[in-house]
Image (cartoon, rainbow, N blue to C red; front, side, top):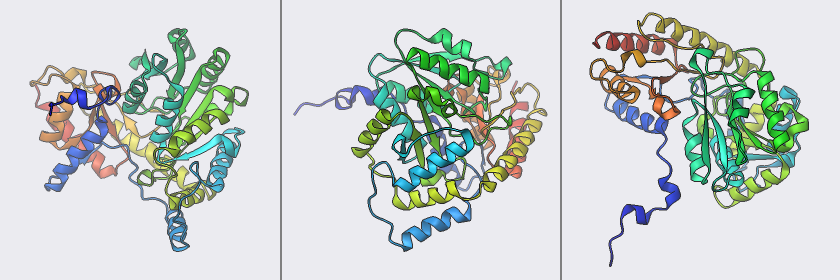
Length: 398
């Protein structure tokens, strides 16, 4: 029997992607914690809040009422209606239930959307820095990533002019993540509308990752779905994970043209099928009850952002833009590369992990070479402890 090499055993498409950097960092930090090491963990993008009680109660009630069987692949009508109604109330969109699919997390919504829209050779415009999974999911589908570099001096701002300059005859889609993971940058309402209208005019799809849309600190939150006359070329990708502290529940959704949503549902029918039935009931509770919990969490994130930024100002050589949303900071550590044997941002992140016991994610995972990402969705005490450890470690480099 012949011996096959790994490249012959595995498909080309799986070899086009890498393990998620954030998941790899999380796995390593969990090992260190299990060994009894006290970690200041800024790695995973996960709210430090518990899921609100009324959401948990809805899931418990569903289980007690034996709502534990298969549902329609796209989700029960009630959860899709709740998504449509919430989005309409907050962003003046006008989606129908048939234009909504409920997915096992926002990442699955993104994955399925790209799989049904992007073919081999299609170009997808992606602003830099980008969330780690965007590039790999595009390449898994056979698409070509066209990067749009943002300017750190401009707070990583993305404009319609920048997007337009990247469009070619092969452009199939544009991905926008606003507020951004990792930088916290927000596309202005004016630029967002201009991008959506430009794409609609040229027959290009805008995939809007709105995972952090409710964690916008500018007071001017807007959705791409708000521009209802352009909805033919807009796919909104949403998640309850960050909004309602429901990361482990795996509750996401997509809103878009009926044909695209139907195709995503068809793909889902051959993979995950429906999202867990009790999660759907919990999601209905999250979407239809008072949104005070969202307002309270957003206010706390702003305080935590300001706290970690104040801490950074005590570290000579470390600079950082001011995030306008989400719950990440993306400091520039270029001043420390080349010191103390530090060869790169990845090297620095590894040393901070093993020597300072601070968990960060290197900027290379997000498309830049002089940054690290920290999630400040932690307690104030963790921020203070982590900043002190970073300050102490960096002060010893020469």
